[in-house]
Image 1: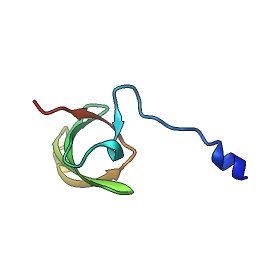
Image 2: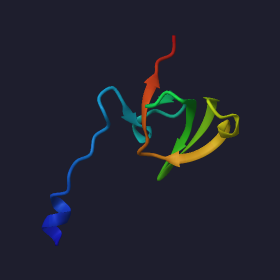
Image 3: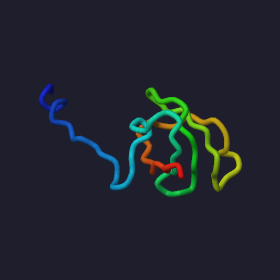
Length: 77
């Protein structure tokens, strides 16, 4: 059983994406599908974010989402 736990696969995000847990606090991000944009506030087991743009008005505001969510980091201009 211990060997099975040691040999588990290493999961990586898709090309051009990062996990929310790998971003710096205060980073701007866009979901992989491009339907939501937001700012990362804190990240432990779950990530606390503020959704600033979304296709659905009900999703705006402060939300808790998984820290393993794949996102694209938006660089500031």
